[in-house]
Image (cartoon, rainbow, N blue to C red):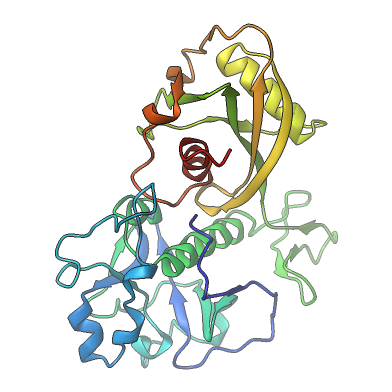
Amino acid sequence: MIQDIYPHKLDNHYDPAKKPDTDSIILYFTKDGLLHRLLKKSDLEEMGQENLFLPDEMIRTGDGRKLARPTLLNEEDLFLSFPRLSDFVNDAHVTEDTLTYLFSVDDDDYFLLNKDPEEIPEGYNFCTVRDLRNQQIGPKYRTFAAITGLHLYNWYRTNRFCGCCGHETVHSSTERALKCPSCGHLIYPRIVPAVIVGVKNDDKLLLTKYRKGFTPFALIAGFTEIGETLEETVSREVMEEAGLRVKNIQYYKSQPWGVVDDLLAGFYCEVDGDTDIHMDASELKLAEWKTRDEIELQPNDFSLTNEMMREFKEGRI
């Protein structure tokens, strides 16, 4: 999954005192997307950083057996790179005061740029994080950093003012929170719980396709409502989307999905009684039972949904 970046490690410890240095990575978002550039293997070799380009860390197909973009691996622009503070030399808009520390990955500190720079560094351009993900750009730890940075950027951007009194918020000095200096209201990062559900019917799994947007096969999914447990969400969503009752609900794994601020919880369960599907056509365009051999996996290994489909297809569930 996208967060499986070993041997790299994300450290999201909140450190408001962290100061940027010339090697700090800068994440700069606009309406056009994230500032970045894509490098070839030869570019990294010229920079003396060829050790960063490891095929094992590039994006793989849904079954995990091969690279998602294997053709011309050494010649294509496949390595995701972000500007460093040194790329903004003498830019009066890129200073310690306009940068917010986000997290680190290994020895790289990531900072969010909160002000438009005077100039965009040469060779860099913009693309949405969603499009970068769809292009299957790697390495995976860089894509995960972009998604996690987007999650925090959206939170900071949409909470500049207090929702209780309208006063401008400030950063807490003790925890990752925005605080209103007028009324004391605290705002924490927006994390939305949702479930991914693998409904089993003996040797078949219920696969779906969304009515809009994402086109590959998926599983039943939905958001947790107020006053509801995750297990209750599973039962409700399966009933709403497929008209099926379920039993033996078992937790599998979770996944942060910062593109839309979600925390996904994966569950398997068994159909209980009637196996006839009554699909909600307003949400789905397809809902079918598929045998293990019939399951078509997603184009890459990013998602919890794909891993759950793969686990069933390959007989581990």
